Image 1 (cartoon, rainbow, N blue to C red):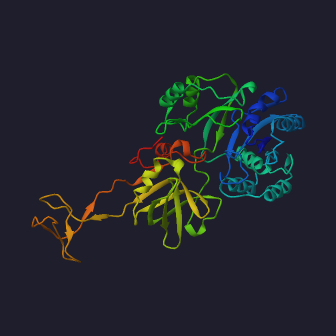
Image 2: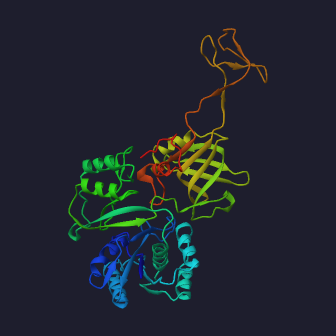
Image 3: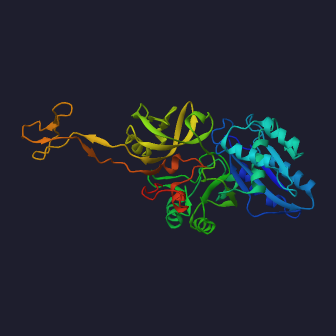
Length: 423
């Protein structure tokens, strides 16, 4: 069977992945637990999420299913933050000897891209007589069912994350991770590991700042590289660790659509032409507008995206782009952007004698030197743009779990190497 679990943590502590790390030990002797549990990041725009909106699933082989279910329920009960009114754990026990109904797969994919209701999860659980257990309102059944389904049917694209956990007496105290060892691990394993450190903004990002049991997580495509990075990092003692197969870094949350089809609460790739040039407002947020010929949508690079905003400020009317990000309050919150083509930027010519900008002599009458050099030029000139076509992304410190880093796109042949992936 597969055990799917979700919604056990809160902003005050706890972590659903930690429960998945506990289960192999708790089930020892009565079940064989597969080596690669699943960590599935669901729609990052759901208002009920705690932090990364992750659900987990572990596959077990046992002749004692009732005992397995009992231990799993008890493990969740002992480790979930049940005192928090927003924590509503759900556990699903999915037996898939006869295969998985397509309806479950559709449901699971929808949890990553759209807002799915608890009613839908309960309907499917009831329809297919799926064993389950809930605490309080059981909202976690949504993610638990999705994670279990992906564990049973697989992911079209996946990466890995090795998670380490703190000793219980250390939880809530300042994390002790040696910065130089993290830099070394990143330098020696990138690009097969990524989202470890924000080189440009000099920030370590693979360790959380919340009072949860996670010490740090190493993400990447190569298991050997991840394991190497683990051996290089020096830190406080680690209680336990586990490596997840995950949809992180895959852009699985992105829906390709027209602007008119985009709905609040989902993330999109929308293509259009810049119709309103970027404007920086108080707070450092940068806004512009695109149109696909039918509808327009506002786009934003917010202050936490740091130097990415400098790229956005270079856009001009007529540039064709594809914007990636969540639609919130009728605005696309940018995660990355592809600049497909650049509009020509025209300027008055320079005087060939003195180098000063020339002035217009009237419509279709050409340009003359302002200083009286006696020079004449018939037409405006094309000015080279500072920006190039290609992909650009927000820095690591502002990146979502599901967002595919450009280095992955390049390595998989999906990106353009003309723009160096910024870390």
